[in-house]
Every structure is written in structure tokens, then in C-alpha cells.
Length: 335
Image 1: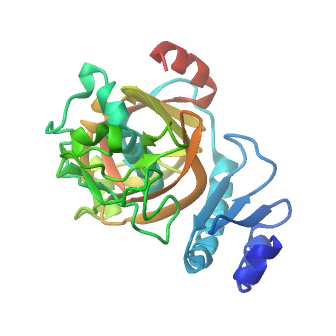
Image 2: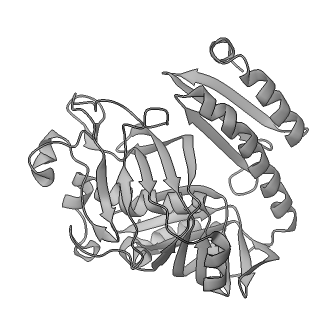
């Protein structure tokens, strides 16, 4: 732990020591204080994408970090157990999917966050649709809330000096709003929503703290509704270009007759059209989870913080492929 963090949050040292003891030999824990943001990165070894579990938390509120570090350690221990029995995919797997809150967060970020950035809206493919279209069968509501100042990605004023405000991107399944700056304010009633980020003269609208409103269903109920399918586990990456997205997962678990089995596969990648994937979201869970992340989102070379507040979500159908096939998948998809 660096000296600045130690002085600012003296009790964090004990929390990190306990996490290190739980994770055991070889675990790596790095913490730092950067621009008022308390960051903690945890991993079970040297970075190795798709093979070594890692997780992190960052927040402007140190109490949130103190609360989340033990949960992050528990996540890594679960990942370790599942990787011990994980088997690789031999080829594509098709079927319904129940997304854990963490996996749902990546989908919401790529599908609705980036898609609702005004510059992306103006260059979207025709197949992406337009404001007012129903995007999800589930009555899903998604908001961008940069004013939640305790979390990563939050701010009071954007980089053009405009006060940030909450924007409803999706209202009960319908595309309802866009994130704008001064140059795209005509898309938000003539006034910027305060989402312009980046250096002077090169700002772009960016999502920040995305919140999906919880639904009425417990995860166990969603599993029973799904019947047979796959539980999407820990996300390890995500990006999108125009109308398509990529989600990378450390593991998935087979679900049969609503029960999670011992069959674990991975690492896997999902590549799909955003509109098609959104059209498969049929139900929303009641278990929202906050991931105020130390991992930054990059657009046009500029990084911003990100927080995802999302519950579990039920997806009618998706195709899982081996992560090793990512280059081929990306090439075929034109990403």
C-alpha cells in the first residue's frame, strides 16, 4: 500500500492484510490513491488473460473500498475453485443465459452506455434503430448518473464545464435519451447533458456511472424460468464497435432444469450485434451489485472511470465461443 493511501485510510492496511491471508501465497494486491480515487487491484498471480483471476475496486469514498475488498477476495476464491474444474470449449455453444450482475454490467455498458453516446448515435448503423424504439422485451430502465460522487467515473462538471445531470437512456425497454456535449446538445433539447469528456477541443460524450433499475425476480427464479442454459460468470473484458460488441468471460456454468451444475467451461467470448442481444433480454433480477471499477474505459485514446450498478439479467439466447477464437471472431465480424 502506498504512503498516501496508508495515511488517508489507515484501516485499509488491516483489510488488505486479511485479504492477502485469505488468498494465500502468490496473490498480488496493489493499492494507490490517484486524483482522489482509492484503488485496489487484487489477483491470484502474475497477469495472464483468461487464466489468472483478478478483480478490483475503486471509489472516491474509502468506506466503499473497505466494504468491497473482502467481497473481491471472496470472488477470487470462487474463481480459483471454478478454474480448478474448468474445461475448455471444443466449439460454439448455443442457448439461453443468466448473466450475473457483473456480466450484466458489461453488457449494459457496451449495449446501452456507448450506444447512447451522441457521437456514436450519429454514426450508428441503420440496424441499430433510433430514439423511441423498443430495444428490450424486458421493461429495463438504465440511467447514467455522473453525480453519484462516491463512485469511480463520477464528476460534478464535465470537461466543457457543464454541470452533469442524470440521463435516462432506456425507459422500460425503450431508447429514451442520449449523452451529449455542447456540439451535440441539439440531440438533448438544446442543452448539453454534461457528458463531454476529454482534452480541450477533442471532447466526446462518455457514459460514467451506469445504473440499471432492478426488476422483481430473484436469481433462483430466473434460473427456473431459463430451465437449461448457461450462467455467465466473471467478466474479463468487453468492447464494441458500431453495432457489435464483445464480452469476454473467465467461466460459464451449465444450468439444467434451473439448477447450477458442476460443469464449468471457459474462458469464453461472446460476439453479437447489440440490437439482437438487447432484443433477447427478457427479465431483470432484483439483486443489484455495484462495481466501482479501477479499470478505465478507453475511447479515441482517452480514458475515463466507470461504475456499473446492475442486477442479474436473463438472455433468451447467445452463442459462446472459445476465447482463443477471439481474433477469428473479430475478423469475421469486422470489428
